[in-house]
Length: 194
Image (cartoon, rainbow, N blue to C red; front, top):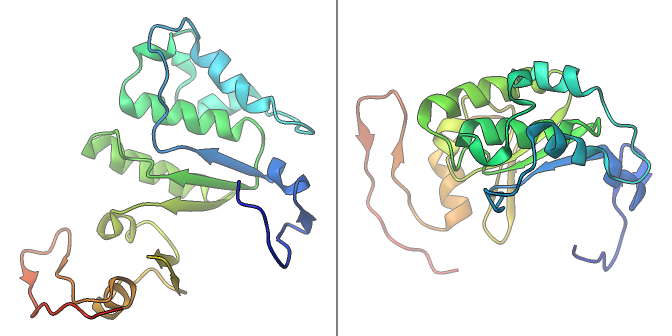
């Protein structure tokens, strides 16, 4: 964790370390020994191990994510999409108000990714979701606001992605390829010095 050098951070009117319990985190990759004999149920319950956290109802969380049938399975037997849902369930088990996901579809196929984003839309009705992704063309369909980060945060109070926004972030012209659009818009590419 990076120490604060000046100012302060508040989340829902609480300062660090108290606001940690308000945040759930789902990592990009969860590396583990696939032969370790731990069940899905046990992994999800690990989400309730934070201090001062009242954990949620295991069956409510798993039914919302449609994984209740996996509870007794070993974690090493799951597909990429099933594992992502379990990691989200682990995070939701602590009843966070904010859910942060780092590249959540990195290890799932296209169909599972689409289903996953629809699931996030449903969860977003109850919780704030912050999603980190390099696939801005796909996520722009599902998000409400976009911030681009490349050493500096460029925040846009909408979900529209423009060529100017990308150029401001990456300091050069970028080809935009839109999903579902049968053409590409190519521009002259001249790198701008920083």
